[in-house]
Each structure stands twice: as C-alpha cells, then as structure tokens.
Image 1 (cartoon, helix red, strand yellow):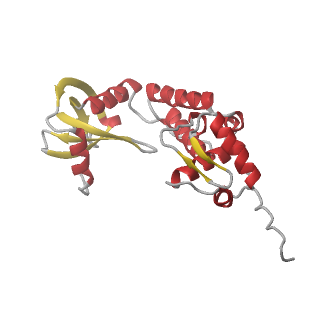
Image 2 (cartoon, one colour):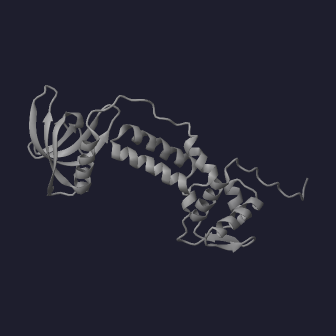
Image 3 (cartoon, rainbow, N blue to C red):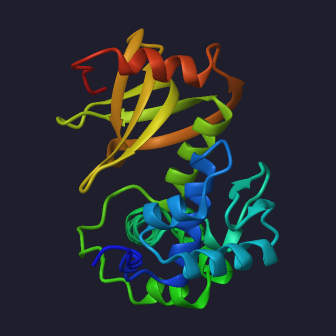
Length: 242
C-alpha cells in the first residue's frame, strides 16, 4: 500500500559484542557525520537497535558526537579493548596459539598460552566462551628435533642481531663449523629451519635446527640490520641448504 513506511531491515544474528565492534568500524570508515538510517542499513539492524548501541558505546567512553536526525561521527582516539577482535579474529588467534603451544619450544609455547589467557580476561562473556568452545584444533604431529633451549637461543640471537657459531652436520653426517648471521626461524610441520648469512660460504644458507650439533650466541652484532638481510633474502630464489 502507498504511504506505508518501509519495515526495518531484518537484524543479523550477531552477538551484542560483535554488533558493537561492527558499529565502531562503520563509524571509523565515515570521516564525516553519517545518518543513523545509513548506519542501520549498512549494519543490517533496526534504528532502535542502532540508537541503543550508540548509547552503550558512549557509556563505555566512545566520543560519538551527533544525535538522531542529524547524524553521528566518532572522534579519533577511542579504543575498545574488550571488543577489539571479531569472532573470526578470535578463532584465528586461538588456532594460532594452539599451534604454537604444541609445536614451538617451551618458552614460546607458554607465551602462546599466556596470550590466550590475557585475551580471555578482557573479552565479554559471550565471546570469552568461544575460546574454550572453539571447534578448531591442532592435530597431533611428530615431535621435531632440537631442544627448547636451543630454539630459545636462536630466537634471542635473531631478535638481538647477534652472530652465532654453530657446528652443522650435512645429510652424510660431515660436520663443519660456521659463523652465521641468523635472521629467520621458520617452523614447518616436520622441521625447523634457520635462514642466515654464512660467513664461510659468503651467502645466504638454510640450516635445519635438528642438524645443528653445537650452538653459541656471541656478543658481537652482525654488521647489517636484520630487516635489510630479510628484504634481500626475500628477493632471492633457490637458496641452497647449509
């Protein structure tokens, strides 16, 4: 019938926390004041729900200016820590943390567990339950050689850009002594590989951690920045092992 108001759009089956996060993101996309009706249509909610959510965000400290019939704008500087992740982002964090807790060395595994605990401490209740109830699991894998202490030392050398002295065994078992500049530690399903500049070979080489028989991190920094080594290494192809 003519003259009848259009019915409000059907609301999406989102959690309240997800809805508020979507509203914050929508407001950030608009540099100028945007009408409530535009926001409601963009988010798939009714005007009534939109106004209620705006009031909720204001109560939590969001600097939202405007009013119904005029439009709304979010001033810069507002962060909403409990709602900084979407449900899919939480699932990605949970899956990644579970992989690290099962595949990395002890220190890194504990750090991954701490990350999940910290995230769970700040999430709203309806999202917090998703951490424990997540249906994304990491399957069992074959333990990878190289102890936690060695991997922790490797990670420390990479962070601090220190030279390392290593003894490395090739496939035939022959051992050579090297001084290397480590800048990447790659985790594969069955092996871990260090990418480094090798002073003996005068080039980039890949070293499997399970073949490093001796490892010593020296106090000397290597002469180039890690970011520069990483950038140059990424431009190369078919880099030989050891």
